[in-house]
Length: 186
Image 1 (cartoon, rainbow, N blue to C red):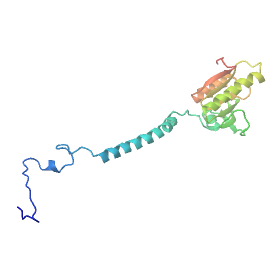
Image 2: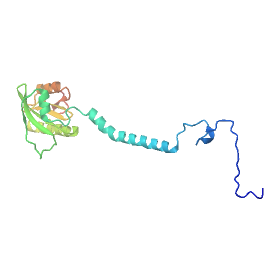
Image 3: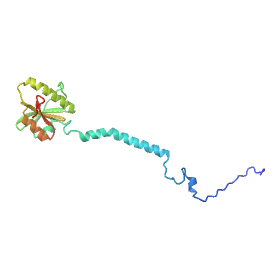
Image 4: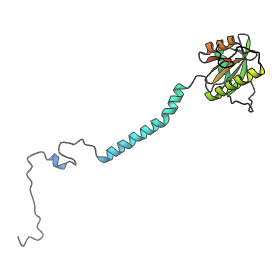
């Protein structure tokens, strides 16, 4: 054996079982075990999908739950009320309240003012201004009533009669009547 330079030694292994087990990357019998790269890529994909869903979910919910008339034009309300002779009012940029659109039309022979809002809070501010100003300007009025819902306000342009407010709520199928001074109900 001393003179074996350059001779390769060959070892033979006798395989009585499955030779495929020796050739796998994992333990015998677990050929479907995912490798780390697949696991990490799967986790990243899941995180990306969850992130997009979480980012878009509020927009989808807002769209599905948005009140019908929030952000609508006053002409849309007039059409749904069945008003005649709708006229859009000039936009007042110096108003105490913020509104989207305003106009007048005739509902059952009574001229009404329709005001719409982009935000429900703008409508509540408008109502608060009405409830503060009407008693000062018309202290003898009793039962002055307007109709309001998320995104809209309809009021008799002259006397704030409850009949017109009730008709507006009935025809629009949403909202409620409000009596000035606040605290009274129609």
